[in-house]
Length: 316
Image (cartoon, rainbow, N blue to C red; front, top):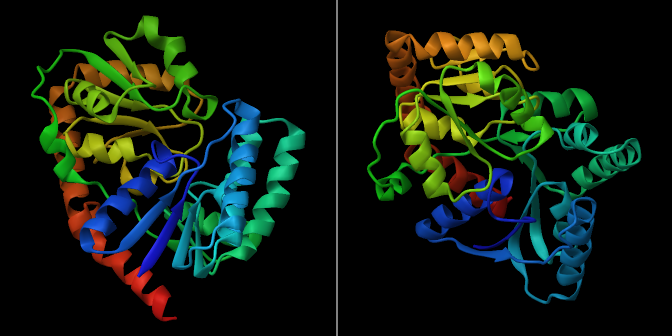
């Protein structure tokens, strides 16, 4: 089976997920390639330039594939023109709503029109959370298949041993509005702990900082399912997160983590300072999170579902 993956980048978010799937399916024996295309490194031009350059590459390309799998809406244009028998588009989060939060009304309107159109180009649509699947069905009456993004626990073996740092809080994610980093910064002076912000760091370094921390804070205004929550589960780091997007699919309040409303700095501050003083609850949350991720979200559990998806699609 010959497969092409297309993503604007292969790190962080859905691009990081694409690369992890690529690695694992290669290990399994699939013949997979990644399309690499440059883009203009200016915020408002990144996605449009990627869509244009990748489409051109697909149009002039002569290689044929059994399946082309595009990750996120900007990749769908190259997916459309790639010479492949079957076409898959994955979206993590509702694309037009993400653009609406981050960009102007003009760009947001264009994104909504684009989103509706590109969904029609794929033979299969997939997402990583139940809530996104439900929202697209209600919003546009389109059907998505749902797969959780697996956690590759073998990668943690190469992490250095680190000393646990008392009262260290950690944020891992993009320095952007939807991630709520400004909310955490706004209450930082009132938190009885040091805060580490991992916004532009290698995965290994971020995980070592996470491993040394007391609490992972996920103050997002908008999410699909953050991979860092699974990583914290595996490292047995208790989590305080907002109850947005697919986060409640992973975190059951007061069982595998603590859920709070978004845009509520007072609740966030209170939850952090309270958990810092409660070793018993911290241990209970950490142990429950670890058990959850090991039973539900590792490659050992989920790989057969991914393999079956591609093999069924090839035969259809």
